[in-house]
Length: 283
Image (cartoon, rainbow, N blue to C red):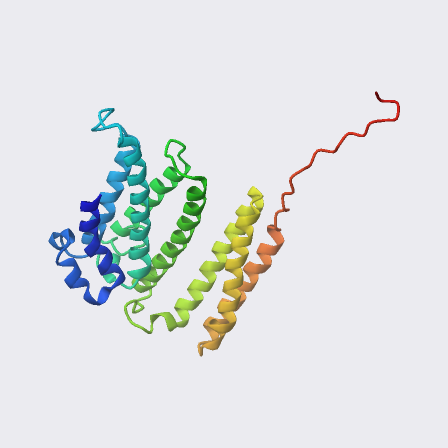
């Protein structure tokens, strides 16, 4: 584990302190990989394979020969899950403006820059699938609090992934300058995010209402509240009137639809047994 941490240290430093990324990566194994997103993909893919091996081949290669192997396997699995979550954060939040993560891809064929049709998003989907499986897997000894907070963290990372795909999609299909500081101030970008967040919030509210999940309904309502604040303080403050009007009207229609089709689920109140009343003639 110490060897793995030593090898991963330059990569993590390059993510969180990109000013000297070249200097950090000169000591990393990723420096010997090809260009583009391959160096960072190698770390995520290696951790994914090791984590899958620990789950689906738990007794190989030690079997019953090493008494502490089950304990080590549990701690190592938790550590790898945490690393993969940090990897997702680095790829889709800290590296959201990195063109190597989506724009310069040429695989498969000419679809490399398309959302979901590139190595970054493909590996991200595999990581999400494995992490969700492990958090729901009862054979892995995880504390209930770890599972609960793990689902919340994965939900937040999925939201970050969606935003990253939107940004890269706008850069590819609309020709917007993703690496430029003016990207986030463009009316097209803000309108796209407002409508996308509203659609996501509406979908979550409908799902929460159907499943009677009050906490999910409240989380979706919070997202819609953020969209409303964004409309007033960000979208309507710009000069592109048509885009702002489209954004405001689209979000307003979605909010009305959400309140109509998916009311908030009732709060579950634990039922208490009614004490039996003994009659006067009872013994």
